[in-house]
Image (cartoon, rainbow, N blue to C red; front, side):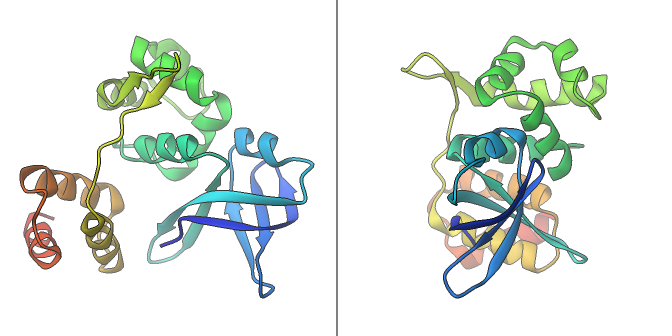
Length: 195
């Protein structure tokens, strides 16, 4: 799994960037308008990465801040919100604004985003409202749940086996929530029986 990719900006548009790394490899990453604004005019960038691996495609999403990456992952964890929709949401509202809209339950503002209907807006609010908290520095931050390293390894194994990321994450959250010290093999076996 990629944590971040750092390289020379070869191509940039409001929806994607190509970063050339050492060795001449160019990685194309889908980005939000917020990330585009952060890296526009620069020669190099370091973007935090989310990999979306499916049978028919392997897509990378890049974010200029870890906070935006966390918001993206929280959004795609909501049923009915895919990666493309999450990028549209993050392009429509800055992180703090989006967090404020979710915690205040402002369905109308979420519905104003292209591709977001009333049911999806309500689902986003219900699923994420409790995962957002006010930080010490007076802006909203994602409440992060400390996951063991074996969580990521189990997630990688399940996605490589062809299971959907959202479903796998929910199952693994439940498994590791009940027993944070569970061994990797046991967690994977248990997840397989639950998926």
